[in-house]
Image 1 (cartoon, rainbow, N blue to C red):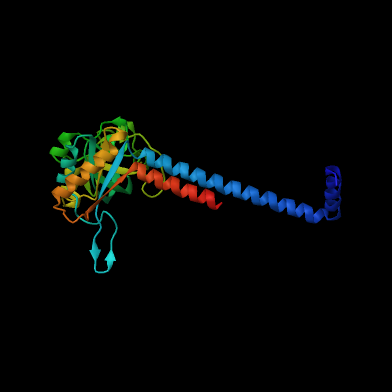
Image 2 (cartoon, helix red, strand yellow):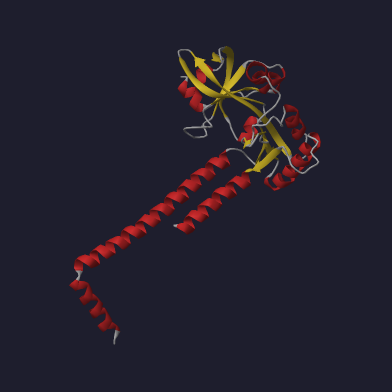
Length: 280
């Protein structure tokens, strides 16, 4: 049978069941379109998450305190008190480390004039902008003198500034954190973000001030570390591991801390995206 005869036969069969053929074609079109749309959504979400991760810092490693166990219940990473400010200082002296920023965090009511919000208050050091890839919009960031003297000075994120009605002219004014007065010395450039853990909705104060006024401990949940270059990340990770094992007296091979690199997080996101694409 010639090809032309096959075509005529196919069209004649379609003609005998036009409605059924049309519905079949519509189903195929809708199915293909749905798969394409889902793949596009998955890829778009993956790109958005990857962009957020990359914006968190430059050549970033995060050292988290270990977890704790209470009977048969095991808590999350960062719940133990196995990392200290002294550990962060020791890490900062390693070769290949560009900057270090330990974090003491809490939640406090922040008041400016007649406006207020409950914000995340982070006690940190001058290395924070370098490690977390922030830049200043107006004013200055915390300096070492403010940390050494436990000064009541604060830098706020762009969203916090908007929520409290603060702008460039507000530098030098007084805001209240947990009922205590602080001098506003800077407002950071926005990174972009909404909802829980918005990187633009935070208040930064000297780590020594946070320890004395709000937290009352020398332990930190995490230490952010910026390697001097991308090709030094693995080396720096190994050096941090060896240093902390020595400082914490670990000889069993079971560490009381965890190191996560930016590359590992990006790899996890990419792997999830690949699986979704295959499944779809």
